[in-house]
Length: 220
Image (cartoon, rainbow, N blue to C red; front, side):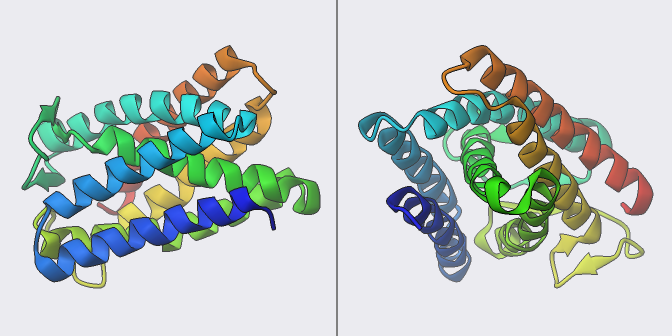
């Protein structure tokens, strides 16, 4: 384990800690502050440490986050499955201002995990393990978002729910899109190939959009 491994692990702990704190204090501003702080730390680390892999993943993540705005817009405006309660000072299309940053930092985290595990486990297992972690940790954010006053999901009483606030279609969405996100990072990464990072972000953003719609149509 190297210092970058520790850093990425700390960003994941910080993300969980931020949303737990926001739920405990019922303050959605903490969610936005946490997200932007973590992404800023990732960018600073990538630049100051001259870490080529993290810089590549940041580029991929920014593109992924911007395209995720489309997924939010579809679910908020057309599907009616999500309702945001706080926009952190600025609404971007139908999303809070921190949502693109949240998906950017998530891309960095899980892309890094997959690329670090690939030499030991192989690409398929590395992507699968990233997706398994993605099915467990990010839905925790969804469960705590409602008590934090950040957002909540809208559905009929027949929609299966994990816990009190997180529908199962979101769990399936995270597992699928993060597995695909990790697979895209594994397939596209090439040192200092920035155009490939942009393309990887486009693929990952598309995976978020499609996996959300597919899982919602199946069990949402």
